Amino acid sequence: MNQNKLVFTLVFGLVGILFLGFMATKVIPKMFVTWTKAAPATKVSLVDSYLIGGKILAKSDGSDKCVVNVFVLDSSGKGVKGTQVTLSGLNDGDMETLSGDDGKATFEISSVQAGQFTLSASIGGSPLAKTVKVTFRE
Image (tube, rainbow, N blue to C red; front, side, top):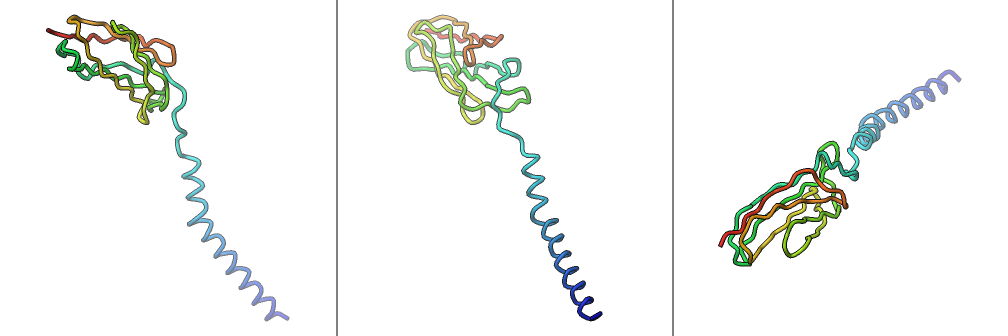
């Protein structure tokens, strides 16, 4: 009877050790990685988002382009995907696009009219505080 009890204890102990080893090497690390992954950015922070000119001088021939980038960011600086961005201040009217995976919305602007234009951006209908000036020369 003692021998059966000893074999049962050894088998039960071995199964327990194998179970704990499996949990420690496979399950728990995956669980911690899942818990610590950052959630995708979804809430736009107008304070952290910004407008910047990539190329702000071009010829006014209708084909040369100025480039303006709007970065749509959340409060931790992560890009917010799929947000509507509007660029205003052009003679042709407003331009609209959606922010990409990195939160960046790029506008390529051409003009046949020479002059300097002050452009402003709004994200989801809310305007950004900063503006950018682009110049089209003859």
